[in-house]
Image 1 (cartoon, rainbow over the protein chains, first blue to last red):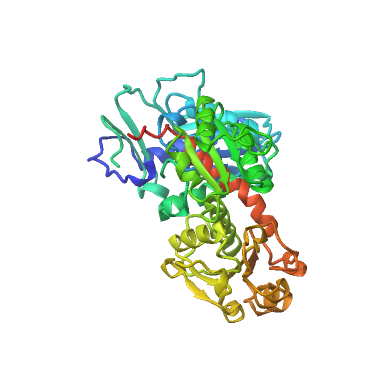
Image 2: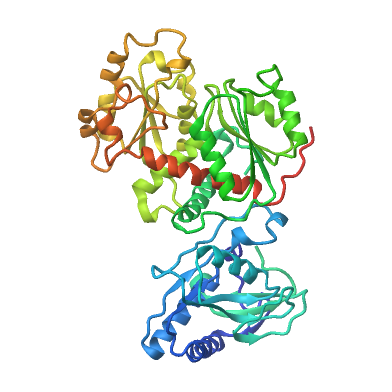
Length: 191
Length: 317
């Protein structure tokens, strides 16, 4: 239900990345993906709802601009694979939308906004296993805020953000929140 | 959502849309190599069937298994019930086995409601007497939305869609649940049936009533045929089967009177040649086979939303 809040910059805490910085970070990640995958051959970008999906689309668009290769892009909902389902009432599902070419034998790059405990990524790895057998799986995140609870790390990071566990990191994206920003604050997203 | 699903009236418009949208998401599972999700691992679903029903039981069983729940099937035939055990004692036995959900089919109206007072888990009504069958109404609403709206179905209700429900309304729990749910979702429902097959209090239902099927057909987006439930009929409700099917049966001539986009539904099992002609049942406008597939998906959505989150807080007795 995070998509319902529309916090305004300034009132909602400290802006740690603005629109320009997000743009530069994504540009760099797109270049790194191209470099690491030797020109993006066989790459599939899968965004984790909600905000991973527009990020994956932006990365795909940038890779297309730089090298003229069309990288398939989709979304992967992990709700049914989460390990904290029983801690909250049953929640609505996000969309899983695989590109028609599938993921078998591909290099899947999972894309999410914030990497924190690593539990979402663990769920995503499980969800992927049920969908096919990629050749390799990589992880791209806009913000890595630390505090991992599982042995998981990102291959591509927009910004490493040292935080305390009390703090909350919000990523705002124009597609959903009408503006681009990464905010850090002391309490939860206003609902 | 409430803790139990006893009546279609338990569902608000928001609840109903959440179930339909969840089902929409789960429908893609059918095309995947592994048609299973780990979500309800360690949860137990008991199918408690006091009345014969192969398709509903199998549908609930498939739904629970695709969500990795453990399924215990309990049918009255050859069980302790045949030895005279009461519903309450059966319920307490299930309770002791730790059922997280009980799916109940019973010949007595109100059985699911009674059971809900005795068990800790969620109760899902899979048909009680001539009262209700809410998951059938949900799968019908899901089928209508998918067929008529296609890819744009997500998040939308059924506002302005005209549904005509035809035939044995009196003995039909499917009709009652559908009238309640479809009107909650904004559809305009008309019942078309002979006066003898309409319940006494039908004027209090949120729908229109007609005795003339032929005049309703040209303005219907959906025509839902009901099974003539001969096993429940204790009196003569119509002169002959032949006369019934002449006036209220769906044949090719009647199907031709429907708008081009309109669909024909039937909850099954069908009496071919009585309420629906074989050519209609097998035509492209019939959704009968889809309804079966959608039944599994919709029941998965219901089980997930009832069992997938935190346990519902204890209600004080």
